[in-house]
Image 1: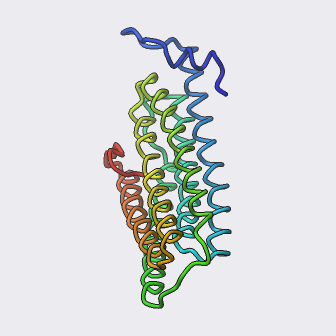
Image 2: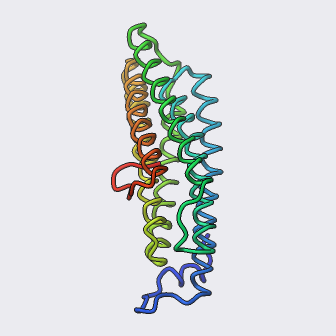
Image 3: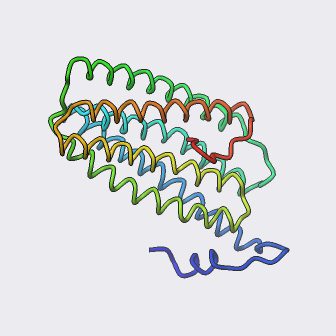
Length: 232
């Protein structure tokens, strides 16, 4: 549960002069905490998803888990960015952030081809996962968790008037879209037993991964990306 002090800070109506230095420090502290929560949640989500994905032979859940692991790299870059902005809001992205974005981009591209190729093979071989039950559970938990993170990232971003933090909040929406893709694919298979539901879900996740990879490289090159649609 968030402290009363934090809630009060977020509900302040800011005047022309903006927030005082102490309140800025509190907000940046919580921005850093949210970035760390995102990182550790993705690590846990990735491990659980990959484990159940392998055990149940569901490529959409397995791919979802790998995507979560790639998001960890991006998340570390975001956390580093928040720490940098806390010291100097006007500072430009450093080498660490750009390198993290490039690694993220390459990883997303590799994931795209791997998922798409596996999904196509599964469609032609009529592969059926054992169950997609855990895909439903993990997707539902992810949707709720990500929307909570988005809610507070937006509040903090607006309070600090930080385009970068607001962009990160919009980027988190991609995780929600991925979760919905996994949810629909998993429910579709559980209700019908048709194997291509799982494969189509994997293809959709691969599509999002491609977009995330592209946005990572654009951001690494310094091309403005507001994550108005999808960004890692």
